[in-house]
Length: 452
Picture 1 (cartoon, one colour):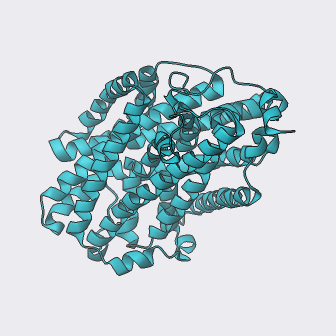
Picture 2: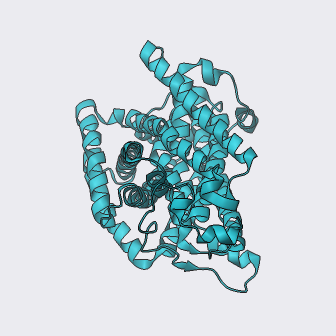
Picture 3: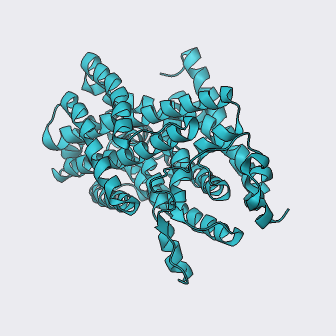
């Protein structure tokens, strides 16, 4: 059957059990037109944006906790995990774009339309758990940033984070391009902050390069594996897979095979470049911890502790301010992307819509409770451990998003001529297998008590 004929066949006859009734993020669906009769470069620029929203997953506050703990405890060794995570993210996000452009569905809709309800509903619950874990990291991280710059107690800072709902309302009223511009601007601020801190830290660049080479200690050392899995969970985030497959469809790329292939190419380049940029930021955080804390035997598990140690070690009062500013920017970025991911997940899986600000308040309320309990009963020093734990929770959710994504994109019945090449499916399957094996190893370490 030709591509043109395939486009006329109802999706339910192309490998789907049912059909979703509305497109993802309907308010902004196909809202960004492509310039007609323009050069390829100008058309590509129209696609720049979604990849950077996805890249926010590299820089959310939870990633700070895992990178600080990994760099301070094991030096530059876990840079290889950051690189591995980046490669995994590039592969998986390219599959998200492929699924969205080929089918017009986001990952949540695809799961609902392809699986019986007894499979789709548990997948929805797990996706919601992942988003709550993401929001937990944002709550704690933003509160710590407010504490570092303004001296606001963590308990008050956590409550203040609920006000970010007004940011969501403002940006959504301006249009999707404003959301992308905000995210990219915040990423620029974060990059500048880290660049200045790295200059102050003056790391061992030879050690940095050696850190990108993998070591067997990642498997044999349970504590290193725990942090490594946390870094993977903080980087290749489950909600990013749902997010990317939805926001790619904000572009009005047309429905012909040629237009879809062009859209897939541009979307893949966008996400790859954005994730490569994010790798430099992600690695910079780990390098900063390895250069500043590891030589002194300081094992840092708390973001606030790290900031307070930066001033006496680096000899500059500017360092903790830069640290706090970047942390708040990370929290604001993650606020926007997690809210959109929550909308995509809820609308896609159960076809239930609610206002973004209502969705935000519910998710934030769920995240605030455990954060307040931990800080009240165990003290603010445990906030960093809470962040690391939230990232490991995310990693446990990954297979339940990755496996369906790989299955869908390998199906010619579902994707037609845009089905993933066999080599890409094999590589993605290996990525999924690595994630699952790492989780099994971690569960074993928990059960045997070998994880200290």
